[in-house]
Image 1 (tube, one colour):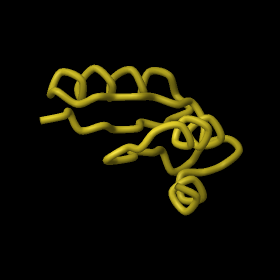
Image 2: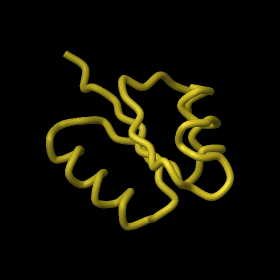
Image 3: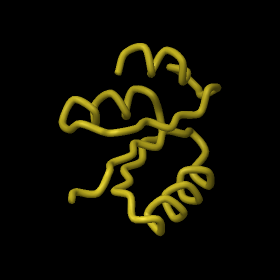
Length: 69
């Protein structure tokens, strides 16, 4: 069975790294993005089972990002 994929979006590098470490350790295929715009570019190229996003980010916030995914 294929690993479930998660897109983690946060403008704080430390938060992205912590989530990536924990989720990868649990067997998930984790991809990270530092902004909503970057996340949209990544999401155009592949499908994710789940997106975890910070709500308050510079530029596009998490709610706007989720509405566009």
